[in-house]
Length: 426
Ligand code: AMP
Ligand code: GLY
Image (cartoon, rainbow, N blue to C red; front, side):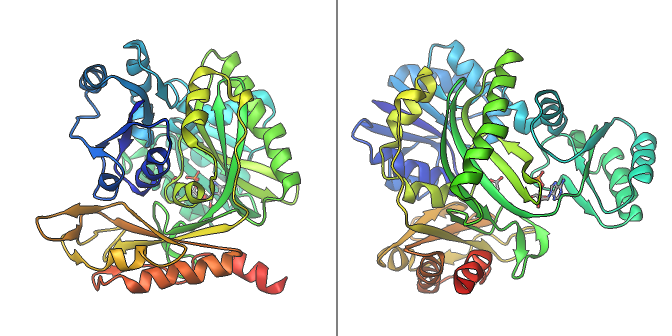
């Protein structure tokens, strides 16, 4: 079978790595891909926003499965248009992608179907939003409704901060994403990400992970797309996983079907493990990046039959084997990230890191020139370590990081700190 994978990040390199290992995959195309995905298949230049052009390419090549990595094309309805053209697509419809595209949509779904989440209100003007904040008090969380590239959440410790965030969003500080604002109770607990593969009716739990959103050591500085992750998340016990499936994932699938937009694809639940049990922070409708880079190395089964079963609505026939080992990824970013990453610097010795035992390197914002690999984005490389414990995986990942010669890059030095602390304390 020929497969087309859409995207160009570290997530897509990890997916390309897993998909290309399948005996079912004869030929893998990645659009647009990156120098890492080029090692797993053929990168193709396609305008992803031109859905007709993507469909024509698929017809011409006889593509049997399209896998969509990022949320942008899903929210824009790429899956709908390709399915209408008769193609098999892994990833949700535009209507189902609202689970990520609109925070208000997800909160209403939670309210209607009894899915545990933070208490909330939604507002279309600054005055009523401010009145709500005044009635609730601080601390409180202010969120832009739409996609805001990770910048749409303000954790307001005081009423002044909350009002400032409301002003910023309603005065267009985040563009159209801030036309509506969701205000939430500030939940206390440990965060974990949980991934489930869904076919509209059935859901297969995949694995858990923990991300590191802040740019600096000790979880300081501005939010980023993610500076590192590990899997599994020790906080997610088997019992909690079962609770999340029963109280959060399955009611979501049932609710989406009831609303006429069944969810097929990856449901990525951002969870807060509170004293009252797991609560949903938000949904994403795709694999996390960098979480995917730690999930794929732990997946021991062929991923392609599972993706096909999700498209065909027969996930109940699939079981997946997972390694008990931990995987941990450290993101190498270009100096200046997230505000203003400096691109163009040369990166050497990636192959030295990749040659180390139990180390994998996935590319993200890199570019191949005639002679070198250079940085071309904010998050540039993912160095993954595998080990019996998170501590061991962490040591291997940093060994890989230290083998790479890139003075213009930086990384956090404490990825995995929560799990490592837990392991030390036994
Ligand atoms: P989101 O983009 O909705 O995932 O929010 C980004 C981050 O903000 C989350 O990973 C949490 O750390 C934090 N966050 C969002 N909503 C809440 C909430 N209601 N209570 C506590 N923390 C939150
Ligand atoms: N790492 C967070 C995300 O993919 O949204």
